[in-house]
Image (cartoon, rainbow, N blue to C red; front, side, top):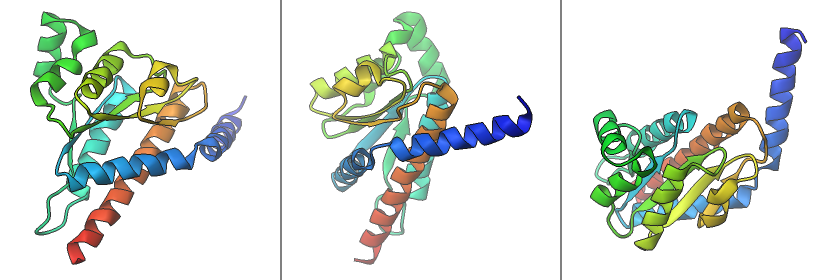
Length: 193
């Protein structure tokens, strides 16, 4: 297969997958984002590998990109960004506890979690989601493949129905940009009112 075929096939697959994402789930997630902002609460975002990078990217987009003078910015925090804390928790407890233990320190009732796992079965992600939910928090999941356990336990799940990590991660980043664009518009409209 030539590089031209690889490029065309990848783009074709991406467009096909994009058309299969349930946009009503994205709209439900936006409602939770708006509720989190109005309550002046925090959105904790986390995932492993490429999903960790998406977590950092989305937290930056929401925190910096969704601000206006005289109003509170959207409070978003990526649980993947404190390397010393990640390694200390992994060493002293286990890697499965790496996000849950951070939530034990940071979580306040009314906060929300956005859990990203292409497989939907990352144990550390699932532990953190369950921790937040036991404390009354809402969980948004971003999944791929068959959605795994995360798809079934999330309050709202945005599922990318495809079996390739790269394409699923691409779509998760795209969904993240939709969410942050929506919040930027929501917050900017509140600036003028």
